[in-house]
Structure formats: structure tokens, C-alpha cells
Image (cartoon, rainbow, N blue to C red; front, top):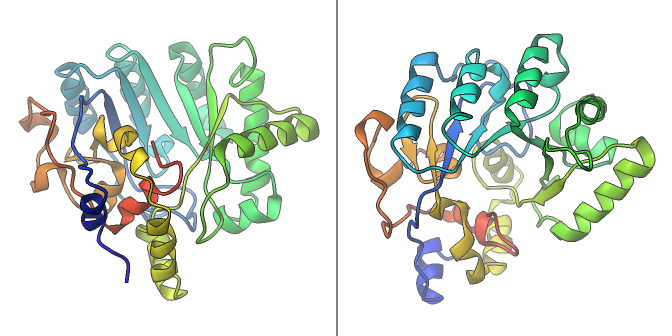
Length: 310
């Protein structure tokens, strides 16, 4: 039986406490055009959850009250939020850096041309899901045809200047394992994928991030149905690295749901464990004190295994 995450922290004599909150992560909804097998939010087609314009205004007002240096917009597929351009444009006037996470495939559609132009104009950083240069592995994880669409979109982004040497348009990729095992070493994986993409398709990007799959949402359901949950949690806990604690994203990040409620991170959002244990809306808070405990669960092992999820 896997030990509780709090017991593991106590065993290693470490605490997981909030530091200075500098990053505002905004989850604009569970709606997505894909239904990836590793999704911790169970996002997908037909999900109705999307942030409306009024909540976006509240979130931006919230951002103006705090010394955030970065805003990180995620989903689902953020592109599906109708007022995403408003959110990007206003945040770009408030924080130093705005990140937009994308699965690449939606941006191929003509209706997103103006969104891409806005991203270029505002120097929005793009972080794109890209599991592998292997077609069968990518399509098995994300859906038929996704691999080719991803390559096509990477080409389009490179043509716009994203990810190219000497450009100020930053493009990074994120890779998650295809199953219930640890991710590859980040440095080695980045070197290999950069070489493969450049040699085979003349495609380029800035950085690669490799993360363990978090046992929540659709991925947890698959782990349970396949009988892999306990073994996977044991693998994660066996690879617990106390050195990851100081750099965990939950220590300097606050996450906001599509309804405007606060969570320590996107994984606590998925687990419906609100910040401070109570439902606090962005309109109801004026301080994020340092030193407050961060709510945890067994899924936190996914962020602290190996090199961690920072």
C-alpha cells in the first residue's frame, strides 16, 4: 500500500508551504477537441465548461491587485473560449509574460488566424503538447491524425517565427509518457526530439518539458480499469525526490478555474480541492500569504517523482 503523501513529507522532514505567489494560472475550461488518454481533467469534446467574459474580467481585475509576473492560460483547449483574445490582450498589459498552452491541432483552423496574429503581436509564449516524434505513439495517446496535424502546425508556427533561432517568439513542447511509467530524462529527450524534428522535417522549438502523467481524471480511470493504479502510485512514490519540493509550481502559483475559484494548482482543481479548503472567488481575496499549507493528495507524487514537475 502506498504511503500517504503527507506521511512521506513527514518522513523526509519537509513541509509543502506556499512561497511568494508570482504566477497566475488560468484554466479557461474543460472543453477540448481531443480526449487524450493521459488527461488529468477529463477534458474533451462536449464538455460545457468554459470561462465567460465576465469571469475573465474578474480574473484580470484580480491580476491587477497582485504582483504577478506571469500568466499561464490552460484548459482543455483554451482556444475554444470565445473571449480568449480579450483575456490575452488584457493580461499582456498586466504581467511581464503570458503563456498560452495549446494542443496544436485547433490552431490549424482558419478561424484562429487572428488569434495567432494576436499571439505574435503580444509576444505570447506558446507551450504545445507533443508526446513523441513517433506517429503511432502520438495517435494512440491523443487520437488518429493528431501527429500529422501537430507537425503541420509546428511548421506554420516556425514560418511565423515561433521557436526559431534569433526570434523573440518562444515555442516550447511538453511530452508525457504514453502509459503508466516514468518520463524520459528531460535533457536527453529534448536533444533527441530537437535532432529528429530538425533532421526529418526541418522543424524547431526552444525547450522541451517532460512530465509524469498525473493520476487524476481520465488517466486515473484508465489506471483503475487496467489494474495499474496501485503499481503506478508505488512507482511514483518510490521515485519521490525531496529536492523537488522547493521548486514545485504550487509554491509560487495560484490556479483559477473557469468559474473564477482559486486552487493551489491545476491538479487540485481537477481533484476539486480548493485553495485553503474553502471556495474562494477571485473577487473575494486580497492576499495570498506565504507559509500557508498546500493541500495534497496521492497524485502529488506525480510532481515530486524523479526530476519533478516544476
